[in-house]
Image (cartoon, rainbow, N blue to C red):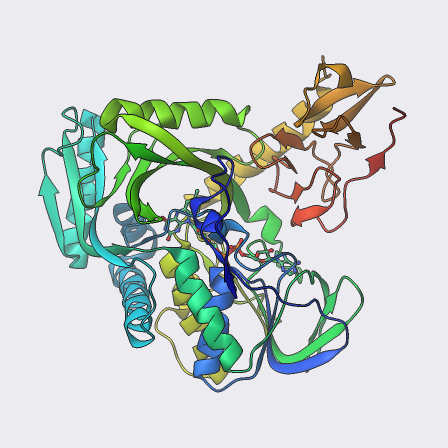
Length: 510
Ligand SMILES: Cc1cc2nc3c(=O)[nH]c(=O)nc-3n(C[C@H](O)[C@H](O)[C@H](O)COP(=O)(O)OP(=O)(O)OC[C@H]3O[C@@H](n4cnc5c(N)ncnc54)[C@H](O)[C@@H]3O)c2cc1C
């Protein structure tokens, strides 16, 4: 295994630049195991680990490389402070269930801490308080309601009326004793243990379907069957829907992060500004040097316009509060949000006793992935788990979230229509090398990407899922669907579902 230190690349995540690189083969034959896990991000790896703790034989596959998905682009706060959330959650699921939600996440945080200690994992794990702060009167009111919820839920907390890095801050709600870490150092250590425990890991192996039955099988893109007693979908967006209609119940939300050396240090703590646009702050270390991660600028995937404006806004914000010396890395990705803002963890549908799913973590996947691992472990072993009914994917979504559901689908319909009506006003000639965009070519609308050496790839911009128009994401160099979040590479290959088929390629005579 070799430590890969790439040249500092501004359009890359700090974690991926500092990742120890193992590679794994792709599946080349039919295989069997107790459990087949699809997806090698934090959810897949934590779940695989949990399965081995329970003595189960595991195969884990990833369509690309392990940890390169959302997990490689996170900010890795390990916390139960999931934004301003608990006041609303109590209204939605009641006090006893809200208490269970907090308990599940606190236990997950402790599980990570225990594993780090037990296996002596060097992953920069640091205990930090988590802060929600506001500069606005309306924000203070919101935070006071959240404070009330913390008191009722018995959360260890503090209330501040100032924070040292910004004199305009009016109030902050602190959740004590939370944590931050280097997610890929932690996960790499777990992967080493998985290898030692005999887990079979495969990369560049996309799951495209499932053969349901008493012993279900994952069908890979190259036609191999991976048969197990259980299949667990940890593929971020569920790779298999099983009539669960997940694409109508989850929407993707994109965010941006920059890692910068700053003039002033960020005081110890993990911060989240609740005023819009909201900003997230934490420290991290790269090659022994302290940097500040500045995140935020969230928007629905495919609906955010030029990524550069979001990075510039983050840098401006960082400069105002701490002074930016140098931006070392910048990156963006999306996470998935369910209709009622509670993740889906459990059986795919009521009719799938041996296919399970974990998705919709709403940018709080560090703890939620570990909640998922233990909950799924208990379901598989037939043990009762106090959190099952909170996360159950087949739950009824009551009012007021039905309104949210309708709003989301109206947004999808609007995207579908707007995308079709817009006519591009640029041609291939307007694109600079390394740039993509929607262009007019031979009187037709196409998606075009011009590589650094001037080659052009054209794709049909109709998403192969339900026909919305994809938008160019110049930060990740992907085509993103604003409706349900499918993402495609420059050449149209599926990077993330729900789409299963690539975008149609068009041909360009140079
Ligand atoms: C900008 C940002 C900041 C965040 N910050 C935090 C934070 O501070 N704290 C926190 O708790 N959470 C945070 N999150 C959320 C957290 O990062 C995610 O919830 C978490 O990483 C999701 O992990 P995952 O394993 O479920 O998905 P992923 O990491 O995306 O892994 C899924 C894997 O499945 C693979 N896959 C997909 N389809 C297939 C297929 N068909 N076949 C095989 N493999 C497939 C993919 O290649 C991928 O490797 C943040 C998210 C974002 C976007």
